Structure formats: C-alpha cells, structure tokens
Length: 333
Length: 306
Image 1: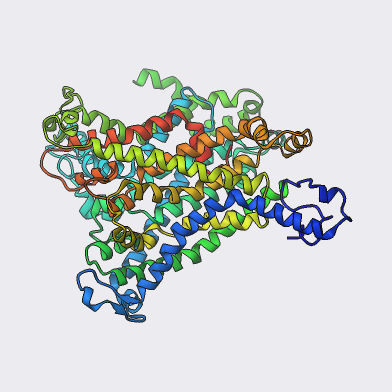
Image 2 (image 1 turned 90 degrees about the horizontal axis):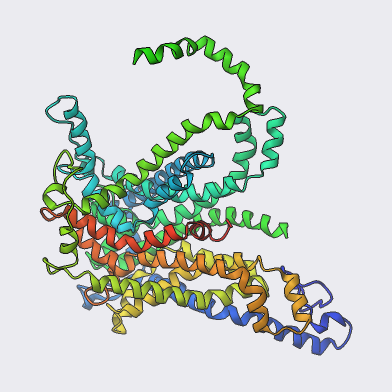
C-alpha cells in the first residue's frame, strides 16, 4: 500500500522489514522504487502456488457451473444441447421440491447448530469443573466426533433407529418387560420422525465439536477477574452472565460459524439415513439427485448457482463476525 | 431405606434448607464450596459422557456379537463374543473386498495432506512472517472458498474428469482433497506462524543468519506443533469425505466411506457386520484423534485456540 510511494513510512503488517532503503530514506528514489517492487514480488512468491491452486480448483469449476446453468444439457438427450437462457432458473424457482429443500436445509442447519451449541456450552461448563476422571470423560465426549460421518449415519440408522432390533426400541422393550409388560412401545423412528432422526445423529456428532471449542474458551477465561468478582460478592449466575458469557461469545460465534459451514453442506447423513426421502432432501442432496438420477446437468447447475448466491449472502454476515474477531487480534499486536 | 433417609429428611425440610443454605453461603464461599459441589457435578458429567459414548460402545460390542445375537429385541448385551462379523467384513467367508477401498482412503488422505502442507506453509509464511500487501484480503479469500458448497462445483469437475479419462482415478481425489483442505490449512498455519517472534528473526537476520538457518532455528520450533495440528485435521477431513468420492470414483479408486454406503440399505441379518465395518473405517480417525486431543482443538478452531 503505502510502502511503494512513501518508503519512510513504516511497512504495514506485523513484520516491518528493514531494507537498506529504509535506513537511508532520501537517497536514490528510483532505485528504491525498483527495490521495493522486487521486494513485493519476492514476498508474493511463496503465496502464489497455493493461491493459484485454490483459484483453479474452486473458482474455475464454479464459472463452468454458471455457463452450464444457462444450457439445456441433459446426459440422456445429447442432441438437444444448447443455450436456453433462464429456463433452468425458472424451473428452479417454480419447482416445489427446491423450495422444500431450502426449508429443510435451513431447519436442519439451525436445529443442529443451535442445539449443539447449547448442549456443548452446558457440557463444557460441566467439564470445566474439577472432578474425578475428568480427562476420561472428556475423551468419551470426543468419541462421537471421531466416528467417520458415514459410519455414524449407518450406526444410527441400523443399530439405533431400526424398528425391529435397534437399540432404542430394544431398550424400550427391555424396560417395559422389566416391569412385567408383554411388550414396550415400538416406534418406527425413521418413518415417523425422519428429519428429527437425522438431526439427532448430527447433534450427537457436533455437540462434542462445540464442547471442545467452548471448553478451550472457558479454560482461557481470566481467573483473576473471576476471583475479584467473587471477592466483591458476585453470585455464580452474575459471574456467568457478566464475565464468562461475554468471554465465551467469540468462541460461540466461531463454533456456530464452522458448524454452519459443514451442516449446510451435509450430504453423508441425509444420503445414508433416509436417501432424501420423506421430506429430508436438503439442497446438497437435491442437487446430487438432479445431477445423478435425472442427469439434468443444466438444472443441477442452476440449482448450484442459486445455492451459492444464497450462501454468499449468509456468508457475508458470517465473515463479518469472523472479521471482527480478527480485528481484535490485529489491534492486540 | 427409611432408616437411612430419616436423619437427613429432618434437615431437608424445604424451609429450613432454604434458610440454612442462605446462611451457609458466605461461609461456604470462603471455605470449600468447590469441594462440596464436586461429587454431584462429577456424577452428572460422567452420566453425560457415558450417554454420548454409549452408541460407540454399542457399535463395538455389537460388532463382536454373532448376527443372530445382534438382531434380538430386547438386545442381548451379554451374548457370547465372536469375530464372525470381522471375518465377514474382511471377506474371509463372504467375498467382500474392503482392502482396496481402505488403501485408497489411506493413499488419498496421506498424499493430499502432504501436498496441502507443501502448499500451505509457504503461503502462510507470506501471510504472517513476511506479509504481502493486503494479506488480510488474501486470507479472507481463502476462507470464503470454504463457503462455496462443494456440490456447486461438482458437475464441471465430473465433466472435466470424464473428458480427461480421470474418473475413478485416485489422483483426481488427491488433487480435489488438496484443494478442499488447503484454505483451512492456510488459516491454521498462518495463526501458528503469527506466533513466531519477529524481533528474534530480525536480530538473527542482522547477525547474518541465512534463510535456512532462520527457518530452522526460529520458525520451526513454533511451527512444528502447528504443522502437526494441521496435518491431523486435513487427514481426518480427507478420510471422512464422501460426496466427491462417491461422485468421481467407483470400483477402482473407491474410498472407505464410499464402500460403507453399500451398507445403507439393510439386507437381512447383517447388523454385526455393519458395526464391524463402521468401527474398522473409523479406527484410524479415532486413534489419531485420541492420540492428539489438544491438536484436535487447535485444528478445529482454525488455530484460534492454542
């Protein structure tokens, strides 16, 4: 920024580099300009491979998606390939299945991120206390997050939700039989509560994630401030409300943001547990189905573009919160 | 029962308890309020922990049961243990072939993680130690690519891979997993490299230390734990990935998660085998995650938590 035009100004960023030019600021402006340009290029060099790679692999395919979204491009009808203007977009917005996919995606994301954050906070507060076997409990809590998502979805679908031999119905049966009943209530979980079933399995996986981030937040809490407040007679609730919670806020935001990025894109659980049936098809699954089952590439691309535009709108707000966290860090320097 | 509860019941009279609680409060705070609370909170924490780990334990237990015992209602918790499900999963008796997908997953995860580190570390260096102009903009560009749903770029990737005869090729997955994890790795590595003491770098540079010496003596000690955390996260995310693997590979280059989706529809008595399969595929992630719990937290928070 300013370093090229005004070499005597301190270089921006955390690492002011003492070039000879800065030590003798008023000599040879021409050579100096060339040197600072060379310096800028030298600094850019290590960044370029990663930057070019990411642009090539994420931005270019998306440009291709935009082009295809304006085409009639169906794998089963290669003869009809050609540009069709906004037809695919009209189809996206008039198709009720897309609208329901939007609702499902929002419901799924808000429920899973919200409940995981609340549970994660409560459990983190619990694990922040000293008790016997704390490390063991922490390790047990992490386990769900370390199960491969497809494996977790299979586990919930077959071993827990299965109506005839799953653990949930089996436990209900065992309890009822223990009290002398013939049979316990048997629930067809996946058909009666399809979306809730998916949400439960995802909450189980993501609560440990939130807990880990929030526990790290709690453990970095300024203990002297808490101690001082306690000396001044603040109660447990007051300490939580006015010291712990404001301190945790940035960790809640971070957890919520990262959780949302991954849950919005969730494919594994929806694909494995219900295969998008019974109103559980979210946007990634719907696009996948348009792409693979209907093989309508043009429509699938238009769906993808709409999703990306929606994501950009939401992400702009999300990035602003991360950005504010980031400013704190920068100001702290 | 009643003889034990009688002495305490006098003191748990609500009114008495309430007043005594209030009166006792200041004393408690000065004394050992923490100690007195502990056992109850501890029990609650243990209960919650067990509740969360229970499905995992149930999965492991069921995987060691016979198929008949696995499918009973109520569940047969104390049924005899057997390795039949693992024999079936590894194809001793059933002809299933889990080794190619497991090895494909290992190749894709390890190679892509190495590639990510090779690309991310120099980039992070250029965003922290010797920052380029507008380095915050570059950093946020990297993060913003994570908001782009993979599914939105899936179709062109499929068509290009099809055109180049790269479908069902493990190298395609390696490249895509590298691009999937690179933005996260750049963020993490930057936050770690930002901890490098710049004054020390400058002092060493003035003393005539070369770039290699600087990297080895000053940067590496701070960066190595960060590299470990980054590698762990990239490995886990690559190992877990399903959408790309399912779309772009099939029989030859299929990965373990893709192989697992074969169990999505139930087919008679097979619960024990499903549990064995889920456990085997999750084992590398469980082992890596448990072994490096602190690194896991650092990684998951993109390096924001140290």
